Length: 59
Image (cartoon, rainbow, N blue to C red; front, side, top):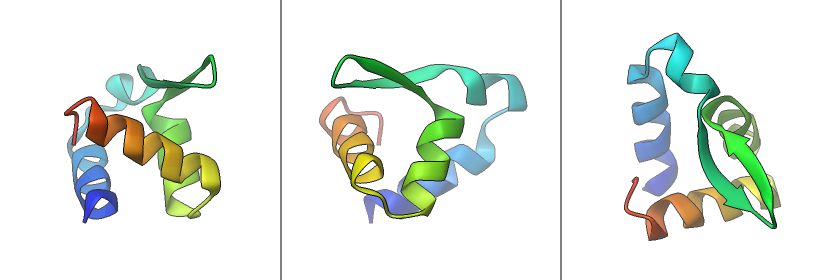
């Protein structure tokens, strides 16, 4: 369910907002665009980003 929420939120974002940092994982910042790529490809990093966004209440 969280992946679907992310994809819906990403689709509604204005283009400039997609470059904004949304999560810091292991000391590295990740933007909406990078998160989209990782989450869409079901990578381990994508799962970490989803969890972080959920924990922060973004999703």
